[in-house]
Length: 183
Image 1 (cartoon, rainbow, N blue to C red):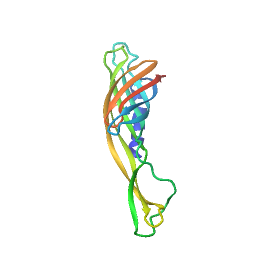
Image 2: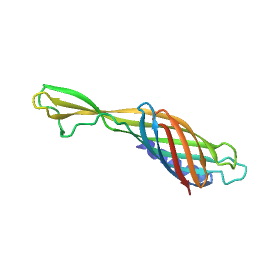
Image 3: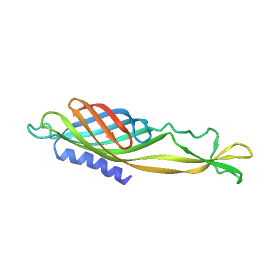
């Protein structure tokens, strides 16, 4: 939580002291990554420096991403406690969603042309549930869960003017296209 608060403070302070030219908001989706799965992403960013003739603009952003894993789902009717006896079969079930946060930094390639190259980094996580099925009754019992964390890193390019168009490629989401607005 402290890292998230620090990232938000940096997003608010740095562009404001550097003469922020505006706020950007974009959303989009894509497909790919190691799971060959669809994703949905939202980004909030600050652009600055592009309103000065001859200077390259910069963008700093924070985003959220959701990757739909499409893996086996936890069965319905699972009791919220462990199996009361030792005659069971333990199965692993992946929650159907990997989610995470990411930060972006970009620089205008040529001053006053609105084309940017971007670098990004972040973290995603997903939950793996352990469900016991009683061999005696067939009922399901919750036996806890583990969270798995993955680093997210990649690059992208985009056109950031009044309308924003962006294309990212990274190790978790695969290819993601985003569209948005610059205020």
